[in-house]
Length: 581
Image 1: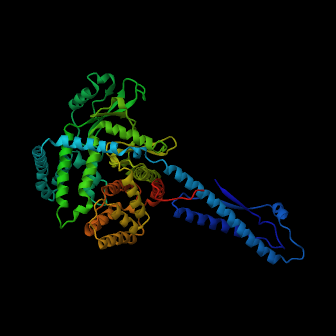
Image 2 (image 1 turned 90 degrees about the vertical axis):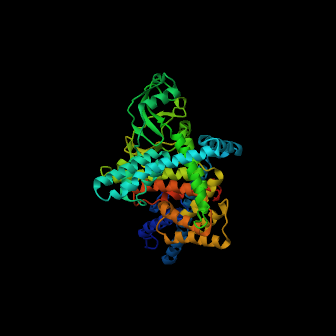
Image 3 (image 1 turned 180 degrees about the horizontal axis):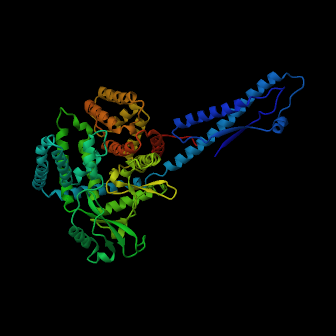
């Protein structure tokens, strides 16, 4: 769309003509001013405005010049009046565009997650069910729980013990070094899903960990140790019946293995409500004995967090370690039930139904059980392949921008965040027009905060993105559940957050989450300000996506993508009011 302003400037007055350069320079000036205004409001760029010159007939019909009047003052008056009319018209165009953009933003902001309308009793019931499942898996008595934890700690120590010998020997020869790294990778896989998840995240952070570490543990992102076909057959018979082969045909050779389940490719033998016979399927079968490992791991982590928070000289109680472990537990335990992942896929498909550049596998609910997930097979190329030079820079930039936009939408607008966005869970498709499309897999681990915590998160992250450190610091203090900081500590904490923003004027919070988060945690411990677990977990989700984006597009500016999301989220929560057009 092109805005056009007609300026009657072609007819001469008293032998003098209005310079045509005035038209070109004015057009550029007004357009630049419009860009600046809309940038301040975090809106899209305006449509270009073109100034044209009317034919002489139009001008002569409107302007009458008296014979005995000097042309110079009249020309000056013409220029002044023309400037006023021109400015009024341009302001009208800008007001119309701003009203349109704001109306669109307001309509999108009204599309709040319907899950927020669930009653408090339903949410409490879900929380009680999760807690009951957790406690039932640990043991009925404290003695049994302590015994199980002791056995688990002993097994982990046995796994780690050989590294005490291999680590020093690795300096003697490259062969011993390779042996040490191979054992370290194997021991992390054997330790179970909890430690594998941590290693997967660490391998995406080349800015925080050594290159050798990142390279060695990167294999855990798309391939971990699998289980036997005998276990798969036993689980399929339990879930789908002894005649499961009449429903789905499986290739016994797995196509992948994650920390929770092993994946097979299959063919649908009978039509379902959504898919015809012959549809390609992906079948995920849960690994054996992982539930007991995960439950005991969280019991140990909770006890460790409680112990560390009680040490007075560390001041770690203000990092919400126990709350963070509890929130991680609440999103990790449902991942052990494949029907939860099927429901997560359905919601992600709903949330991104209007975005053709993002998609997720479609689950088949009637064939899914607690230990088996059946979904449509998704073709695509692993996102890690796009780091190679045989892929164009344009494709890498497009993938990074789409991936970041997806993560920002999950965090700011949907309140439903994929908690495992490492590169092994993202595929890339290319359509006939050569446009890229992201396919997101393994949606068992999600983060959902609820309306109150999400509103607090939006307010804090919005202030950080806009570099208002004083406001962000005060919001962190105000939203804390238990704050023991004195007035002086609160003042110093807020000033510290503001100093972080001032010292890093070039960058943006969402572009350097790791650095910001470390500094914020230090200030929280120093000044006894308890951080909310939702803020920490959301920041970590940003950090994981940041690691992928930086690998594909090191110079990408996050602010252009994040600010519109923040603007809409603020409208959704009523944190920003707009005048009605």
